[in-house]
Length: 129
Image (cartoon, rainbow, N blue to C red; front, side, top):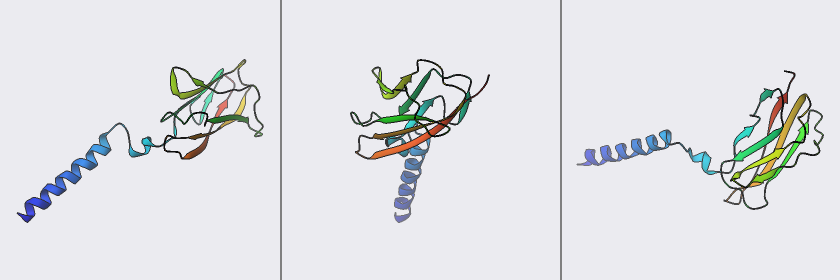
């Protein structure tokens, strides 16, 4: 009887671990973070007329701050990120003109639904086609 009890507990443990391993959402995806970016993180692109950042969850109201800097870490002016009305996890900056060739970094900060302030950054490069 004792062996049957331990075997049952072992099966439950294995099934629980398998459920997390094969689920589409890892436990980390429940926390506020960047889900995807355009341009993609650490990529080189020929031109950029739009910059986008999507979070893993809807941030708290008015908590997101996003800044674009160039290789000299100077703020790129005229780049205003706005919440996407169709997707509340997305923040998009439509540029008046394409960015010049160079290295860029996007700094972001936001507050998730759990109240934690989260910050991060990612880079991309605009190169000659």
